[in-house]
Image (tube, rainbow, N blue to C red; front, side, top):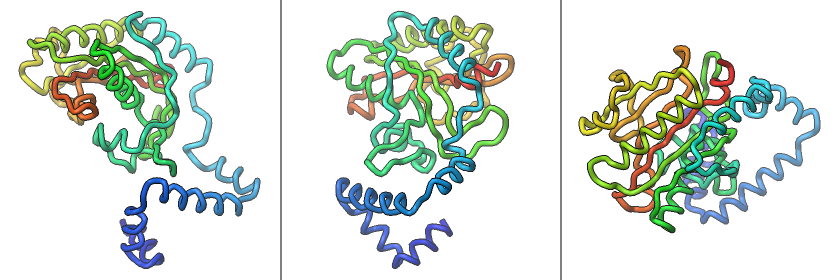
Length: 275
């Protein structure tokens, strides 16, 4: 905040930010495009190379491509035929993470054209699932493999500014007695076991009614719940966390229909590949 305050002071104070925020989307885009064009015109080849050497967002993946590809193929081969695999765009609408999944906007890479670079594949799949649910009313099962970018700083091995995520989502309507939840949770767990081998799924029950959904899977009472509703889980292999998932209200938020249900699962392919 101190940095922002200093910059705004040099531009005439907080009012400068307020004026920009009040611009229509297309007007703001025009201003930002002109600004970036001017800044880019002042760069030389050595300037670009210098940034490439130091910018964590643009460095190649630390995991060899062949190793990553093998892990991706293993996940896709194990996916039930009821799931449709999508080739997702590298960007999603502005606010996909902050407005729907309640993630801080500073943790995503925002573009100047009213979009943001994909930070979580499950968010993008939720958008498509909501569109399909409104069109057909049938249960929707979608999956994708996508390279994503996250802006927050991480420390430790296996943590990268960009990495590959495998995601699967199941969307449908509340059928009563947690029928939707029990059916699709079982499908996701069976897939995880088929795809990842000897994995442990640890479940956090957020609503006592969901004990029947958890079944005999081990409980994880220490889990920070985040944005999940009812039940969530983490996936471990060889003691290393490789993914997580649970029930979320994203399709409810997107469609305005409280009867909508959504289960998401995400796996870090880079981390899985290194195992």
